[in-house]
Amino acid sequence: MIMKCFRKHYTVYVSLIIFLLLMACGTAEKADVEGVSGPSSYDDLLTLFKEFREFQTPKMTNGVPDYSAASMQEQWHGLNTFQNRLAAMNIEDWPVSQQVDYHIVRAEMNGLEFNHRVLRPWSRDPCFYLQSQSGAGPVIHGALRIPRSLPLAEERLVEFRTQLRALPEIFKHAKTNLTDGEKDLTTIAIWGTKEESDEYAGLAEWLKDYHPELVEDALKAKAAVDEYAQWLEDNRNKMTAPSGVGKENYTWWLKNVHLFPYTWEECRDYVMLEDYRVRAFLKLEENRNKNLPPLQPVDTKEEHARRKKEALEYVMKFLEDEKIMTIPDYLDTLGYLNRGGIPHEEEWPRERDFFQQTGDRESLPEQTHEFIGHYFDHQRHRRDTRPIRGTRRLYEIDWIRSEGFAFALEELLMHAGYLDKRPRPRRGREIVYLQAAFRRCRAMADLKLHNHEFNLEQAMRYCVECAPNGWLLDNGPHVRYEMQTTLRFVGWHMGMVMGKVQFIKFLTDRAEQLGDKFELGQFIDEYLAAGMIPMSLIRWEMTGLDDEMKELLAE
Image 1: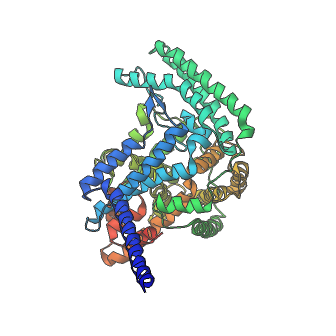
Image 2: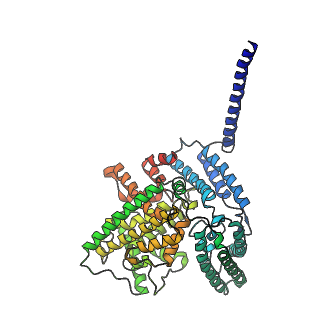
Image 3: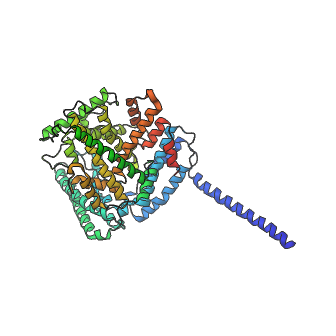
């Protein structure tokens, strides 16, 4: 009887202890999150955002960023604290616009997570340490910015000197940090070293008249990149990591960093459906125009420049006359043609790559893409003073919105009539579909590269064989650039095609929602005013439709 009573009370006693321990663990875990979070007001989000932006920048010593294994491990552990603080915020009662900003911050934190878990450019990607590659993949902090004009103001001179003198040390660190280099990225880096070496040689010559004290530093930078190139050649057989991130990582990147509600498989299927549509429409246009003479490319540099300027002025007037979007005073052709104060001149004569073949025949679609699509975006974003949306996006979480919109303009404005008054409107329609067909080629190469179906060489070969009319130069500068960008920027070219699909869906959703009250110009203006952020967030903010966000958050 005594033993029976003991066992009964002992069981209750042990159960009570276990319960209390579990409660203590739960409380400790909650305290750990809440202890680093606290209140959840919008001001707290702004504070956290500012702290995160400072945190994600590596330690710098005399212009040299620390991407060592120890430093990156420390950053990886610190990221968890920031993500916990963000997750602990209760945002249910915030206005949608503030919730959108919250998800922008969440996406950027996820971008840094992906950088550590998957990309690890500091240890996998030899291109990461090349300053000339800063526009074609993950960017090394403190990257050298070559000046557009000389002489330099004192403050800029100090910054430039520090960056220039840091380069030999950066390449020295690269040789230590690249412990699991990737084969195709090594090939791309070797291409880049030649470009960078030539750039530093030209820089040394240019500095002679204005800053002779920096000439030796420029020559040391050239010597350092040449030595790095040789080191890559000597060690390329050790760079054996596979190309691409795999479709599971690809899907995670899209959904959690770019807030893009599609999987790798869905993107592949949509890209193929878009390809069938575009190529069928191209054949219809070619059949309709079979008795018309073909478009001929321009003959001279002067005629090319004249047509380009004319196309820019034409599209601005068309957009205003048709009330498709508001054109601000700061958007002008001179600023676009003379970016950075330097006239942008095409090389001439030249061997035409794909977009020279199309643009030299009808310049309006591609110039609309670059001018209204990208340059206008850049100018607007420069003037955006909002504390989160106005900052330069990390991990390029805005590129599907940016590239999708710019690409969509080419065809949507054609259907709106912007080719109707051009000298050869019917043949001009063929150019729109030719460019769309080629962008599908790049999108499929993107998907297959990251699913390990293609390596770099196979992806380049596929694009050359896929490009309409055989217009893509074999192993030329364009196919090299496009495939290195898609390998280093996960989903770059797929996102262009799928961003167009997403934008058209968004436009349709809004038109159906508003019915007779829908106005195209108002829709485009509101879309652009939302900022350089993922399209799913813009759609939620403009329409109140939260189905895409619920799907993304349910992952």
